[in-house]
Length: 156
Image 1 (cartoon, rainbow, N blue to C red):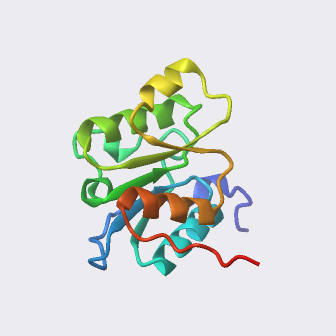
Image 2 (image 1 turned 45 degrees about the vertical axis):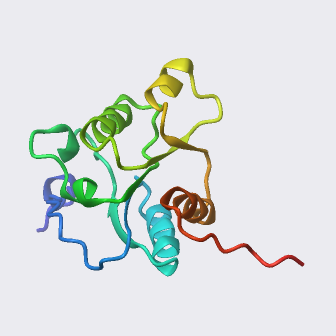
């Protein structure tokens, strides 16, 4: 009789970063919500960007970026969009590592409207987007930060 315990049979996720598929400006999107991350990635791809998506650390796992090996997609990104929830220590650690390892790479961070002084100090120099952000807002912000032309929406 098959076991009813699904916890014992959950597949292990092994992330294996792949090289960027296109030569367009490269954007790393860090988002724990798969659907929202994919929506942001779709908008960026439609706008002409190469996109890699990272769900961030899951459960008790640590982000490879915080270890000695680093993170290949972050290393090669032209812009990083972080929506990991900077209220959490693990997300703050990732932002700190991104700023330390890749100080020249623009970092767009989704922040709560009531961000405290410590968080504002950590994010000084980052491009802040007040949560919740839409995929369209992320695309426009990436275009502005990357210095790319921004398509204005037609006026009624």
